[in-house]
Image (cartoon, rainbow, N blue to C red; front, side, top):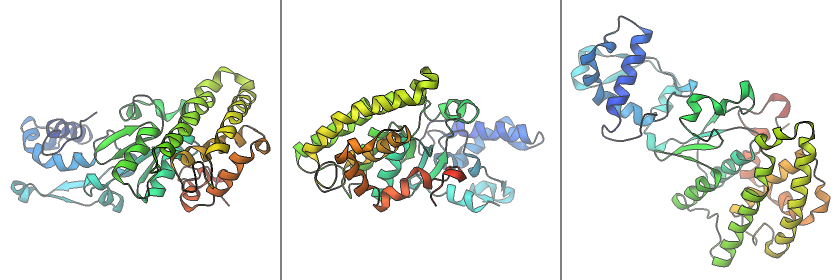
Length: 305
């Protein structure tokens, strides 16, 4: 992976990459000449700080030409699509979310981004197509764990929903996702870990494969057992939402997990507190926007009506 950097940190690798690719496409192009690499460095720095992850998502592949007469001033003129123009705005301002519509972990980050009012560009990663796009080499360069979500934000790549959401809350504090009171903050984090560590990992596709035809039965049983404890815990912490009457990080984790529970046939009537909180949350705009039925890669037959 080409390292992200400013002021020339990645210029050498970036320049060589552009030259090699251009030479492959156009054998007679001067881009392949050895001396050209050095001249390219200064021009490519800004370009590749916009695109630190290679290869680029297909929607950002560019068509461009060099203004040879003005080459000495290092100017690039182009014939780019509107998508390309969007992609070339200052890289600090761009947020790329690598997501899958049905992934509960991705849904958590989508909710957090919506609550924070952060605009982002959605890059779909199909977890089921051709054995899973998350295992392809180009995605491993983004997230070596071959999981979603991953996010490119503020010039850094992050994976795992907890640190992503914590980073969003620390860098974009309004509205806060953690309560002011230390005890309530601890309760919110506790609920997050109950779901993130104690429930969701038991229903991942990798685990379910082991159970073959009984995978839905296994998932239903594991979630149901865990929801008994979660229900009891929420009876002590909940107000309108998981911790009191303000939306917290705990709520961000609850709703996607309940959606998964319903998918696997869990009888939610046994968990009135969980159900009440979920009903209150799912009508909020951020939760509506982030719902799996409203994503760019949601299949037509699964889209919200």
